[in-house]
Length: 275
Image (cartoon, rainbow, N blue to C red; front, side, top):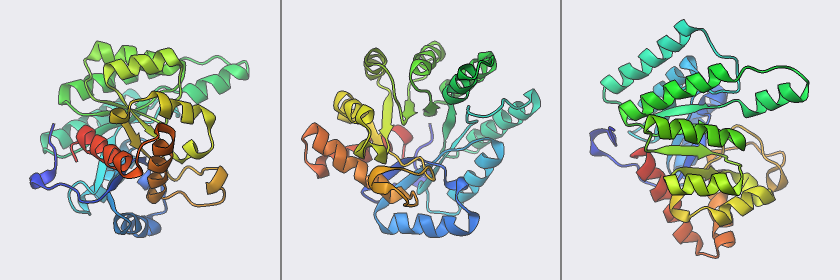
């Protein structure tokens, strides 16, 4: 997998490991990114929703110093599956980026847990098969290109995703904003899969328990911006710097020095993404 372009490594003390930069207004993206870099961000990992989203994130990556905006290309599962032709175009575009030797990950991809469970709760049928097939295809691509894969897969869907990753031979996986059973957590730890936590660690008991269970060497911090948060973040716009708070909470939960945890989260993210 290509790493830092021209051998350069992003300087800084923290990374937002999962953010939808392209979902912010175009006029405010640059100012937001500059605030993040001025505040010590080594990088942000900009995940994509579909082909057009991927194109925007690539343009953002090219507009900054190498690895400052580290893109991930894919198709978010909480939306209708596109046509075969549209998917073929996306996969061909990703392969072209690989052929050019560009740095990127595969993502955000996964399974439509929230769409599926909402449909089922409303008494509607939901065909999960096309989503499972698409994740199989993305996992095979990640394994072939030796790229990290960024996953939206929670609760029972995480086990389905783990099955697919194992069948495909994927070696580097990142489950963002993960929630799941203790059995699934043990399975993911054994496989060496990374998990990133959001600022909701400040007020969500489920996430705080996960932070206690998951080993520090497999943890990262994210915002999933522009997703809004509650608790101490109520009414505040989500920006990359909020991911710094995650380190403080993980340190308190694990009873470790904040600087040790902050350094670990930074190095974990750099290691996974080749930043």
